[in-house]
Length: 266
Image (cartoon, rainbow, N blue to C red; front, side, top):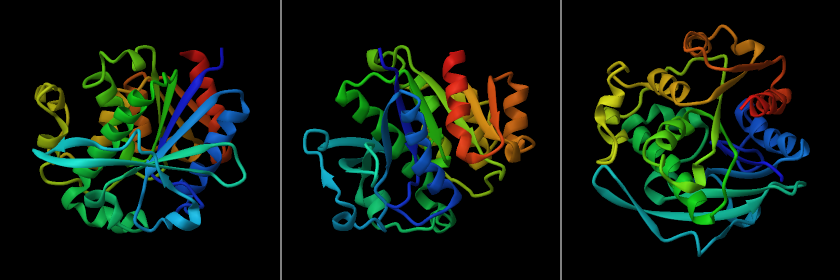
């Protein structure tokens, strides 16, 4: 039976401008697919994305759900398009409050930290709810970028009893640069819903910034993928201290090999 991989990222070119992250976002799922896996991809629908040019269209059967973030209802809209020249479909998480009025580059978004925690929470919960609605059971999830940081945590807490994720492992990709940007001031409060024990965040420092989010992602992931450039980063050293399985490659273009190595260990 073909193994299924859910790839979650914050940037994919050509939907957004080229950056090291968006280029890897473009090539990694194709590399995984070429190894024989069935792949589905999720990313945010940033305001810079031209829906007509990129041929996005709304998936009515998946849209219409509301997610409560910080005691406020936010509609979840799902759109879809294909990566040009591939057989890979990308599902876009859309919401006017968090994405439609936000452009690129990502640095501009990071500098506006007023709703960064809510933005990440909405994206992560939106992905996990949509996959559940698809009734598609991923064997592995690959998380790529700070915006995916809550995926491992929510998978092992809020969604831990969902049959669709019963046998799912999580790989977290670490970069050579440590995140310095701030999350929202209320990050700790909004991460935990009524169904999650707030004490689970006690091991993490205040303020709960990007580095603490990275530690959270590592703690709840099954394995870590990184390039040689990331081997001495603070988060990579943290992952090694937690005795997490680690797969390392020399070039970002080979990241799919690191992911596959971890899949086979799991």
